[in-house]
Length: 134
Image (cartoon, rainbow, N blue to C red; front, top):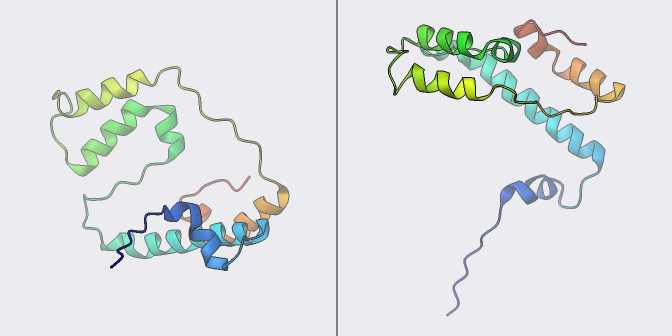
């Protein structure tokens, strides 16, 4: 009697198996945009189900501009006490201060075709959080 254990990483094959062959660049783009659209719609539709005081949305620009102030705001809004406690905010603040000098990845700008596609399909995301579409 033979027993088999199949071990695979779905990340490496999920998109390919979705199409039962190697997808084209356009199919990959469509898959990614469809997933982003689905995820964001679901989040926006269901975030109201989270009880008050249990959800904080953080704009990346705010986090990037002042990590410590944004962390304090998150702690306060979530009602997490002891910002100065070594197990709480102080550790988070030390971590944030350790990010000094960190440099973000530098990605090439998306093509106009992709920018237009994202703006059209995910425009509701930009509107929900007042993001600039440029």
